[in-house]
Image 1 (cartoon, rainbow, N blue to C red):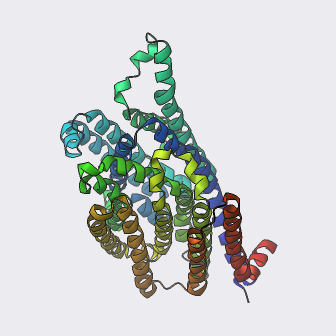
Image 2: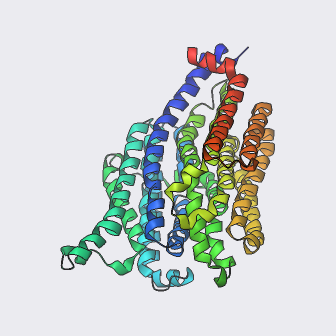
Image 3: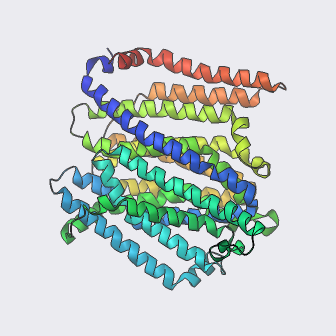
Length: 500
């Protein structure tokens, strides 16, 4: 007997999750797809070593954003779902991030010269100030955005994210293409007062900042809902719940971004470290579809599993969510790797030498998504410190493997390191999680799908066909074969779901 035929509550819950994921996903896919086009755009404007600067500094932004939000989003969801004082929780959470953001900006501006020197950009204090304000704005608006998710307003949430991406792209095109073109044809134009050709990649950060400011103004209706309330007792309780999430987040950023910080430090100057970083960073971005899928899922899944934790069938729902998450993730993996010749067109030919990292990065990101899916056990059982321990183990492994492999293999060592790390973290989280919050995941089918997907990719990568048309025919057949295997295994559930 099949779950979809037995329990309409489960079907309804999965349908709601799928619907919200689709809304978050469409905005994320469309928005990030548009934003993603900045990568080929940059690859044709900047040299690899220049794009390496962008990759390097945005890695620091990712770390700083996690630190400034210090896990408060998850704490907000947790406390808001078990308390009737949502206004107090919302206001206390928001004010805590407002305060930390203002403090961070003040410190960054006062010590911008020291920070620039530490990051090996001694003459680029402006970069530090721009990045500080960008991070502060994103952190300060995290709770208003989280409240939209809590209130079940994915359309409003998605619209604001899309607006941010639109203006980011608009300002990039304006500063990097329109302004130089106008100055070239008319040197005395007013553009000379707002544009300096020597600022170069700095306009990438200026564009991001302007887009963040516009988003802040559009969030004013949500910001007005914040009451002049700050409960220190509540804040302490939320902070100590969220603090391990901060450690998890920092560990996660280490796992995802430390490679982009270590590559320039571990590769000798003769091997052109910033050029290698630029190539690695551009090809890392080719995993964008997997990232968009995971991000869309994360937006909807965290409030989803908190709101369903009291349902009698909640663990059964979580198990089905995991299975279908992995199926869609493997479809994305095969879709990109089997047709990498199509995807590589979007980046400049100077970056094509790094295409070999794409399969490893895709699979690593899929395991990151699985790890996030598994994280519900320590968030629901209030054992967030255990999540921090597992994240810490992953961070140590990532740093160790990167330090070991980068000097030997260059950026390819980073690709191996990130995959190994997320696989091990997923295994550890599953084994430990089953002891504290057991969920009967369908491991047989999940392992079957992984084996089939990896096997089909191996066939495609090893079979040597000179004809491009025949190669595409083979890859289309392999992709269809995976879909067929899934359909045969899930036939009854899929048919039951469609009927419902």
